[in-house]
Length: 150
Image (tube, rainbow, N blue to C red):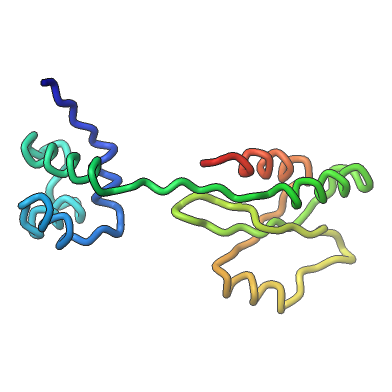
């Protein structure tokens, strides 16, 4: 039977929060070997096929890659109504990174009369959120894409 090594799976596993202990216990590889790949001390392209296949087998059997989806339906509807009323305005967009994926969680008008309050900024930062200034139509496209499963 032909086996193909998928370095993408191995990289995902090594970059995950799965402990070196757990990987070691299930693959019979030492934690030192696993940690050398994790730190880059040993390059992945220098990995033996035996080690690669053990890590890939562990990944295939145990490691479930998470998918991310975020229901943006209500925000999309509200933004479409705002665009219909006010045109392609500038807005503050609240952003949160989840597993390295940028998720837009809220928006507000950005103009001279509407500024973010200190409380809004503090609450956002406490929630791990940041801000971007975007045009409303661009944000709408991002929200529609975000409404799909990543």
